[in-house]
Length: 405
Ligand code: C2E
Ligand code: SIN
Ligand code: SIN
Ligand code: FE
Ligand code: FE
Image 1 (cartoon, rainbow, N blue to C red):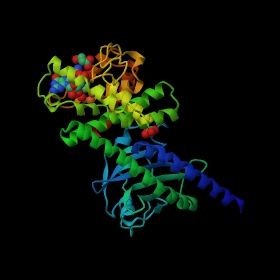
Image 2 (cartoon, rainbow, N blue to C red):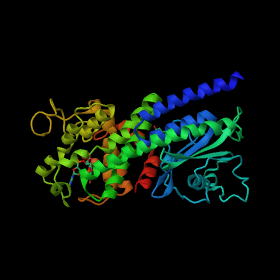
Image 3 (cartoon, helix red, strand yellow):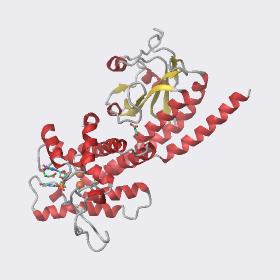
Image 4 (cartoon, rainbow, N blue to C red):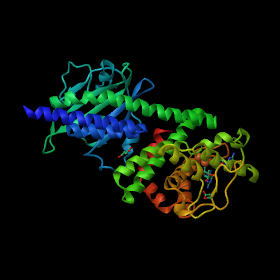
């Protein structure tokens, strides 16, 4: 009889630890990643995904699959843009509508009396074989539905797919509520940042949101590959990646201090106008100068340094005191590792996005021309090891572009 008690104690301790950790994470992707990692470990499951409610539909928002994807690698499938309507015809839709946990032993052997069918299109395109499925709605206290979590293919000790057992059915619901709260908070954080950027740019709001999300996601994934290349421990990698996605979204927040007449000028800027634009780095840095958190400190490093160049010649350069007098550009530019790593990463993400997007002053460049420029500027404008990481994950970069088009 002592076995279940120990198991219970272990579960409660696990539960407290995970709740605490989820509450420290800031970005919604990191929260989804951690949730799937912990829940899958708990029930020894091969795969899992989370759908989030967006515009009245369920958007496929995160995926893990130990059989299909290398552990800890960057993964383009995370940026899939599949959506499922909330109707009783699909498993996730039914679970969302009914608020019920669904436990399925064999996806290919569902009773024909059920209102929903298993959608085998994912298995068809990937060659994966889904067998057991546990689907649970993610709701916050007032009953608001945040999304649906799906855990796939519980495994026995030899790695064979088995049905989910009673322990899984008991413990997974305990995680669902806390997860929903953490996800809701992560979504609010991103929305707050998008609103700040709308104020800063007051351009086409949808284009601004997309641009900011792309630069955040490019930066996070380029850093991820770079960190694996450099042997940075996974724990530090995930912590930095979490903050970087949000901090990179704010790289141009200092443009709030630049007049529309200059920012939206249809043609080429004069030298004097460009000197004024350069100050957006200093305005941004000042905004985060009294940094009280790691996130603030990273926001400052990126806002201030994302236009420095690897071999020098960028701006704003060195400042003795960021607040000394009216906003101004510093003396000599920074170079090499003087430029914070996260700013070097964001510099490449920002230019890639600027080159491939239309601007008030230019048409988008073709993919080919964009890559030519980035390759030419590797080792001068850009840290060459960061360009290498970018080229290694080019499939992920394209998936991000497609998702935030
Ligand atoms: P942005 O449009 O987001 O561009 C960010 C960076 O992408 C630029 O930093 C530059 O390094 C790169 N970039 C953008 N367009 C091109 C291009 O056509 N060719 C190449 N090789 N690189 C490009 P930069 O130059 O420091 O500019 C910072 C910001 O200043 C730009 O942000 C934009 O808001 C403004 N800006 C720069 N040039 C012009 C211009 O000629 N007209 C107007 N209206 N704004 C400009
Ligand atoms: C991943 O391992 O692909 C995701 C890591 C993260 O989002 O923190
Ligand atoms: C740049 O280095 O980003 C500008 C010079 C160019 O490649 O046209
Ligand atoms: Fe900028
Ligand atoms: Fe930018």
